[in-house]
Length: 137
Image (cartoon, rainbow, N blue to C red; front, side, top):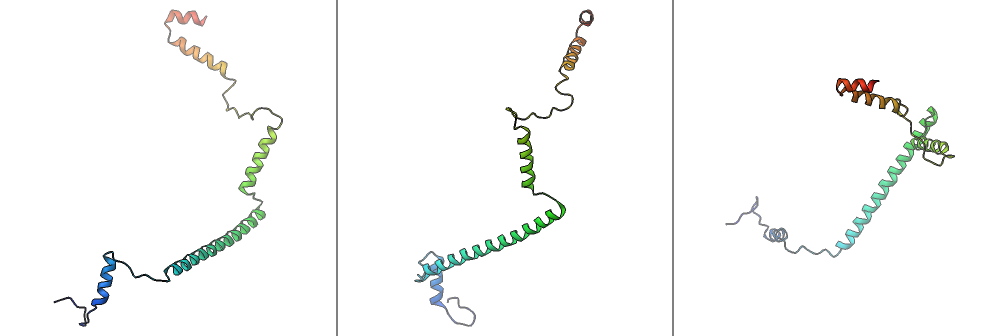
């Protein structure tokens, strides 16, 4: 007794072919398979080109809108601001043979003498009483 699908019709021929494919048997060879694959690849390439063209067009429209806003409000592009800052930096150091000086934070540089005194005072604090008197004079 074999299993039969509902309706009592047996599909013995088709079931064995499918079973053979599932078990790793040879698939039916399609003579036009290479041609179909080539057409499919070409269709994919064409769709990709169309997609890229669509997004390039959208980006161009967006950039035109951005430029309109920049013009309306007098805003410069990020690249333009960076270029101007670089040009200003180069103009400042044009006559100099060395790199541009960096800004010195307040309290640094000229305070070296004050710092030496404070270190000396700190050392004197830890000396015994008679030695402190000698160094304070």
